[in-house]
Image (cartoon, rainbow, N blue to C red; front, side, top):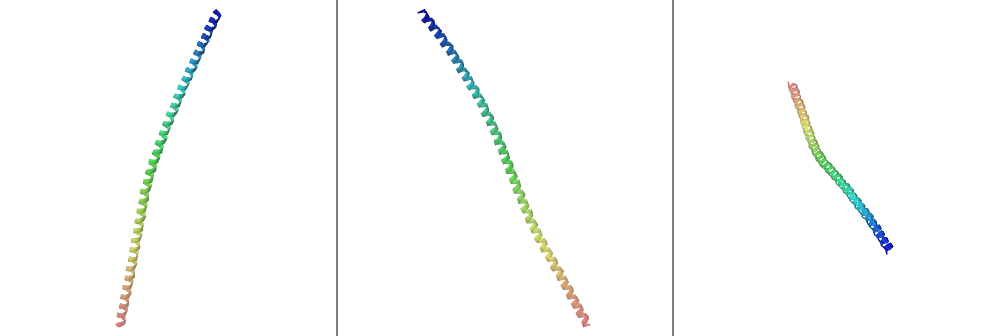
Length: 125
């Protein structure tokens, strides 16, 4: 009986040590999972911040693009207006040059007529 009792006490002690080891292992795993979880949360947070920065940069570039597009559009419009104004001025210049040429031709014709009349008078005398 005594040996059986001692064997039982040994078995209980071994079982107790095994249970303590198992508890320690489980605790260690739990701590490892918590640390992994914290690392993963830190990684996720870092990624969220990076994505936010990327989105902000993207939005900033989009805004700059819109402003550049508006600026380009208004510059194109200004160029078109200036081109149209140049056409109008060239047309006006052409009209004025034609008018000047006509006046010169009319003056020449008038002088020619005067000379012819003057020549005719001279011939009459």
